[in-house]
Amino acid sequence: MKVSILEVSAIAFTYLFFGWLGIEISKKLRAPVSIGTWIALVLLTFVVTGFLLGPGGLLVQIIGFNIYVNSAFQAIGVGIIIGLATRELRRKVEGDDLT
Image (cartoon, rainbow, N blue to C red; front, top):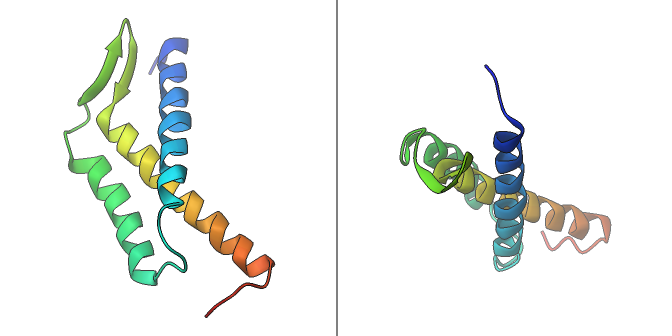
């Protein structure tokens, strides 16, 4: 499988931009986050990635610079999970554990 530098840069941009967007969304969720929310986020991240539009659902296509819808949703989900995890770790380290 041959991958061009343009495809690699599109994947990197997708995960950086949409991952950042997910982290920003995670700031809107109130703390602490229940275990049900964690499970739903992880499951939705994987389910939406695999079954939403199939592997070829394009969000943006500019001369080989392709951003796929599924990758964008996966990056948002991973960003939300990372944002929530860092917030929970920060709360535990600072001793602000309310549970």
